[in-house]
Length: 237
Image (cartoon, rainbow, N blue to C red; front, side):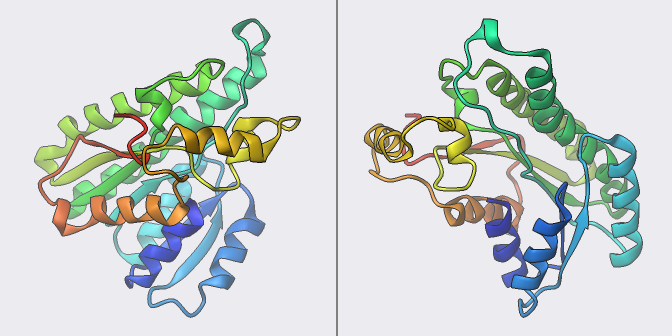
């Protein structure tokens, strides 16, 4: 979903800085999109490290003279795990990446947006935050926290001209899907089960999600803040 979002925004002429804990991933994204209308630069960033978030944000500010948008789409998935088998390491990892990482980048970017008097932030939660599934308690809690964080920041920052909204992706045909299904599960069978529960009869694509991000960042959503946009083909209805 991150690459599709970078591709969508760069295609619109946005100067994008793509950050990922894996430098090879962002380097490849920058290579693929070298001919895009907008520039794409890749940087390595561990969003669980607050100091790194501040450092990279300051570098982006200096390079581009301002930050208009922030899209927090980094995430860490987990497969079905009973409560009593959730290790401290798994719990901490899920919370740190999905919730703490979102907070860290918002905290680093917002002062620069305040200085400009405008900005738009899109955070990624998940459909399971609104419609929980069993066996995903840390992930569900983290993503529900992202929704609460989004709504709180929307209130905090409205007078500063900064909008904060949230995407709730449903089951998406992306590299993250197998992580939810589990290594030993039948991916095709799991995919069929997901599809059978979606009124529109298919999985979301990364491009579907990127379209929602584009809308929430755009002037068309200029009076929209504190909202959660479900992109799940009607599964959450």
